Image 1 (cartoon, one colour):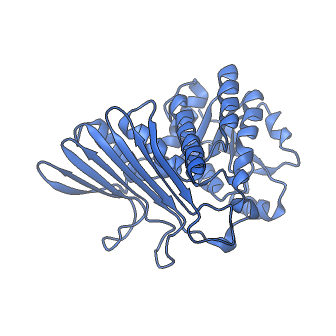
Image 2: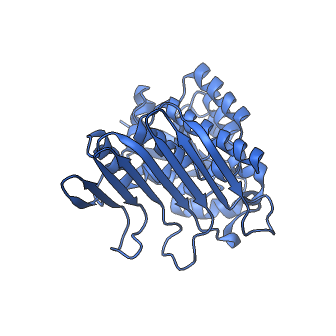
Image 3: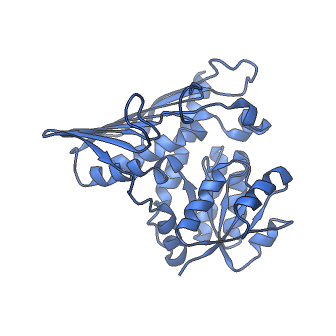
Length: 334
């Protein structure tokens, strides 16, 4: 048993991964909406089974569609999510799922009123096999009690490929709201914390004066009663790197450490999903190439059975809240 889903807003190419993860899990893509022909053409080639509709409300009014996915302009994702939930459908957004605390408040209110699912596809967790494996190891006690997380998310700017809205602060939400929401969600996931204090936060434009609203560097320090976390994100991936960013995660426990080199191993082995585990007995490189990515399957189960196996709704909202508050703190201090 599976579901039908549709896409509204395909402005960011993350939409392709969002659709693919659901298709791999057995869902059926029925339709999509965009008002931009230049975006519609490649999407239709990639997913010929999907009908392009002239009005997104056709999707909202279709009783056969259970879930809507979106990677629209960042500032438009939350308002769309409100419409989707009020139409009686579940929603999966690209990150960030909201670009202001006011938007987040509205999402929480409507989600509580409707009981629908508002999920964020945190791809640096849900689409990375070594992160999924690290979660299994931490939960099994492989490194003891977790005391510190270090998450870095460098990205390549690729200026020529970016639409105008990408450089407008009001539309993209700021670098911590956007990129760092990945690392915030992972901090909450690995520590098991329901909340975290923002000890410090910083954003800056270090090397893009022609784009004054772009923030190309950001960092924050998080703290709970049991653990701390450092997060750094930027747009400074050098062109010689073989991928868009050397994303890494370090997990420090009382009896061991785990290091993840998510997308490639600088100076090491080829490929992605490198996991290194060091404990009191040995140092291991664990092969994660065949680890299942369960998010798509779990989300479909949640849509069908009204459960929260893919991600607790509270953690989805809390990760957004912390990133938004860190963004506000950083801009106030700038």
